[in-house]
Length: 113
Length: 120
Image (cartoon, rainbow over all chains, first blue to last red; front, side, top):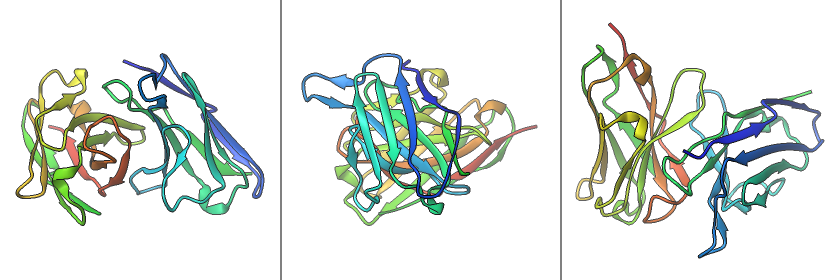
């Protein structure tokens, strides 16, 4: 199985500041035939299901604020929130959909400092 | 898009349950579908996925054949048959829509989940 490791496990950032979450996969999730990284980022708030924010590593889902961005390729990926808002408090997960089982990272809890 | 899971509940170890997911608001037969579970206080765990036609199915190896995913495109419904349930299968089970016809796409819509509790 591909192991997804996120860092840090938790993060406290001041309102308006930048938040950065990292995700590392144990093997590449880049498919050469289409040059896409099979990596998504999800946001989960208490009592709610996960919500997709970013897929193909850097494509923002429709309706997601542009303060959310994704980058990286191969095995190393980053989710950046450029200016933290109060409503961004949540747990963030990365997931690879390159090879079954489509594993998730352990999550990063984002809080307000 | 609207996904509504049902069929969860309390079951004894070794028992069986069949989860259903009623889909609406999109052309169900055009999209792959996935089950994801989340144990209390833990992260999501991918369980099973099925292509849009139902021809191709995939399961987590850790389930060792105990779970079977299926779909009825005429009824816009996704199923998960769970057998030989164990205490460690206790979780909220989510039904999710894939972005495309194949399972190798992100999950762009999720239901609210149904709780399965395995306990004696």
